[in-house]
Amino acid sequence: MTKTDYDYIVLGCGGIGSGAAYWLSRRAGNEVLGIEQFELGHHKGGSQDYSRIIRLAGYGPEHTPLTPHTFKTWGTVEEESALQIVRKTGGVFWWPKDAPDRFREYMERTASAMDAEGIPYDRVDGAEVMRRYPQFHIDEDIEAIIQADTGIVDPSKGNAAHQQLARYHGATILDHCPVEALHPFDGGVTVETKMGTFTCRRLVITAGAWVDRILAQLGLHLKVIVTREQVTYYATPNLREFAVGNFPIFLVPTELGAIYGFPIHGEVATKAAIDMSGKVVTADTRNFEPDVEVEEYQEAWLKQHIPGFLGPKLYTKTCLYTMPLDRQFIIDTLPGHPQIILCCGAGHAFKFASLFGKILSELAIDGQTQYPIDSMTWHRPAVTDPDNYDSPVLQRLQETNRV
Image (cartoon, rainbow, N blue to C red; front, side):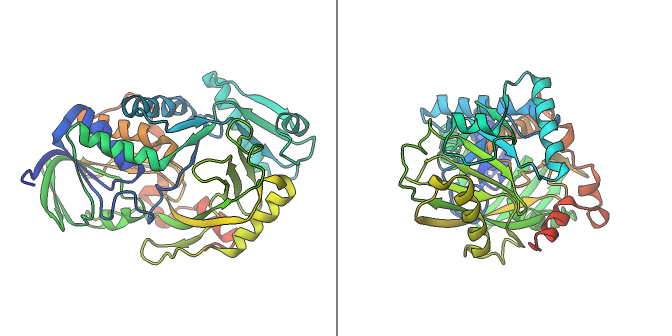
């Protein structure tokens, strides 16, 4: 390898970084370098496994306008790769009668935001949910939203497609290449790595749980909260009832966190998890052992509400959430370093990975993007003054003894 000077370098080739490398390469070809500290497709971060939820429901007015574009950008990747990365399953979102007011308010904001964007959905009671999906055992008079476009986006295929298509367009992607130092200069950045020193005009940082380590070299910090989360696969004997097409994605608030699940995909098994139920860790101190307490809580809930979903536990695997204190996305240039662009996915961005990759490519090449990202600015209290910010994320983790 002889080329060391690039127009664009991407640090971190997980979900969003791989997306950025791909979309940059479509316009800049061999002027793109992606750098990954571990092997491509590793299981140490947050962009792994066979399934993530992709949905139009569940967001407020800031992000709902972006959600249709997640399907469009993944559609571009599917068209170019001839791989199916997204599968629509339909989605059911309900909240118990005794749910805290914040959940009811959240669902009202969701419905209002979809109304504003002309996104269709059905607002139904529990009886109608069970008429459509008799696998559920829920109260007949609960409130629910059913949205037909909800589905699965496959990280194992999506990441590989982004990376391999980026190479097809001329990009270089190096794995096992940890970054040792960053040196911004007027008009660019020098990046020192284990595999050599590279320079670029624009640097994109998509470093996940390692982001504060990278930012520290620039005298900046986010003080992100990193939690170790987990998902469990169940070898249900009820294959037909839980096949794609017969069973939807579901998401329901519980006292431990929002429990969500998938029909059979990737493995011949169903999959469930509880959002933000993991304990606070660091990228270095985390382990890969399942939290038995979370497993037991989840299985008890499933036994009560979707008993046929369960079967022998196939396995539980862990991943990391990396969250700013307000758990909102960040896509912005860094203060004092307009040649460096940061993206933090806040532990729920994989559905946006290709779209965010496109946005990052536009910011790097054009200095602006066609998409509405004003809410994702660096310049907000949770980011600029983390020591004095009253974090709802930390409050929630303290309430559930996750800290």
